[in-house]
Image (cartoon, rainbow, N blue to C red):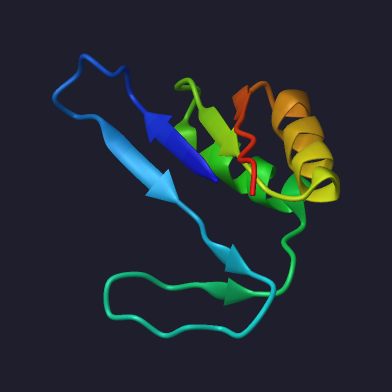
Length: 88
């Protein structure tokens, strides 16, 4: 889940990224990954609160059930959602 706080043209642009891994959890110095599946409603609520009314863009890719749940919660929270599909 990514969200941009402030307008893109603003020098105060910020990016929020959350990474969830359903397989083995990797530890890395540059980011923290949570294991398991997130509650998209809870994540979207928290991001909406943190964004303080600024627009939020949600970029989603993954299996159909993940995409459906995440975009449903994001749209309910008023986020702009974008779905990416990659052919394997």
